[in-house]
Image 1: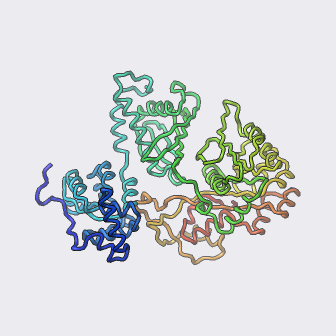
Image 2: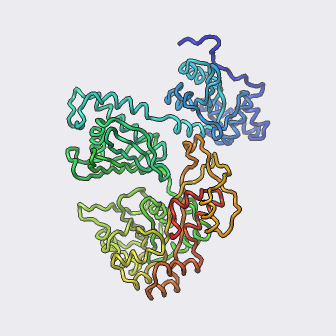
Image 3: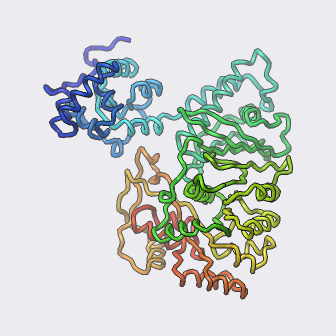
Amino acid sequence: MTISSSEKPFAPAGSTRSLGDVLVDMGWITKEQLTSTIESESEEGRNLLETLRANNLVTEEELAMALSLHLNVPLIDLKRHRVQAEAIKLIPESTARKYGLVPLDTVGRHLVVVMEDPGDVDAVDDASAQANMGVQPTVGLPSEIQDAIDLNYRASEEIERHIHDFSPSFEGNAQIADFDDSDAVAQAAIVRALDLIISQAVRDRASDIHIEPQQNHVRIRYRIDGILRDIMTIPSNALNPVISRIKILAGADITERRKPQDGQFSVHVDGRDVDIRAATLETTHGETAVLRILDRSASLFDMTELGFSGNTLREFQNMLKSSYGMILVAGPTGSGKTTSLYASLNQLNSSEQSIMTIEDPIEYKFKDIKQIQVNEKAGLSFASALRSLMRLDPDIILVGEIRDGETAQTAVQAALTGHLVLSSIHANDAASVPFRLQNLGVEPYLISTVVHGVLAQRMVRRTCPHCSAPYEPTPEELAAYERDMGHSGTIMYKGVGCNFCSNTGYLDRTGLFELLQFNEGMRDILQNGAGISEIRTRAISDGMTTMRLDGMQKVKQGITTPSEVLRQVTAGD
């Protein structure tokens, strides 16, 4: 490819000072450290930039600023600059990842590129050749560049190409098993298309992938930060081969369509091991599938990272110090109950205690904790596993979920016989849990005897910290805030949309919590037949912060918005 003289790549002008001199002059490293780094650079065969990064002598912000001064190129804050779609199309993803760069925008006949190392001539030349225009290098933070690559390079076009490759090869009701050896290209296209759908979901931080047949197409959606988002559509005749591929990976029967099926498989995405839990079900337009994504490489949360307020965290941590009894975490599906239970186990895990779990599924694996997977087909239910487990001398038992009377009764017996039992239960709020247990056949006197407390929770989206700005709340938001907080006049924030939050204004989630403690007064009113409202009123008078109030306190802190709190917690919760 030939580039005319007017399109030659822009070259950084540079300065008379070396990168090392800039760092020393700015006071970020000493002359001795620079000398030692240069010697290390020579021995290890790396350049100064690579050696500085490997040895963590300076922060990425300091190094980027030094590169900007050394090469005389702009330092770009990707949190404040929107990557343009037309620029992204000019540079392939493979090149972006190879060199650590992201195309930002076009200015005249030049492409502005944000780079980890603007002095990399090979990278500038390759980018210029592929874009067929001059390149103006700028410098950015490596972490922001990688995030921008993940967010802006979408797999949609490549997925569509693979779908097109195999679409002519089969009829609408064909399955992978129907292909013969001559259809190897079509099979490979199916495999690649599903791999890309999963990889993109992992990069987008999705918790679930929904593959949903419609009348004239198949809709694919990702659940990100608790909200389903439309990602793409594929032709209806691509549905059965994709579902068949999922079934093969999950160990399900590809010839069976009428019965619901489920299974698990693992994939490797960007150096991470990811477990996928798949479920399929026949609908009027064909089989639908949901893939639950469990990232094994994700670190377990520390209790302080979940969003607890100071008092609630201290009280819950004190509760976890109990040597016996029962602690329950309540909320609907997707409210973060398992995350809170795992964080609790992470805190309790020590060589002095025997901890065992019964789960369905096992979402994360602990070191030094014995975990048991429920297997209903083999006769291993929560209740039967719990009875067997109690004979193995555990100190702490986690029961993934109390969902039936037998499990509830067995868990109570375990708590009565000197074990600390942690579990989750479906209930709208903390005050409803005693009545949920009664519905499962547990006597009120046993509930008041064994339960130490109930943590109820919801998950709300966090305001994106990169684009958060003050805004004028709606009258409904103001009224809700004033009703719960007892005052007005606070400045509220919401995200205006940026690269990092996919222009949604929200990035990640945090918890809303309420902790109902079973003190003597609470035990008395429980045994006297108190109703939900009486239990709730007593808990608030004892100092419980409700989920709704916890949410509005986070609004005051700029963590989330009133609309998020109202979406998750009703006035009665």
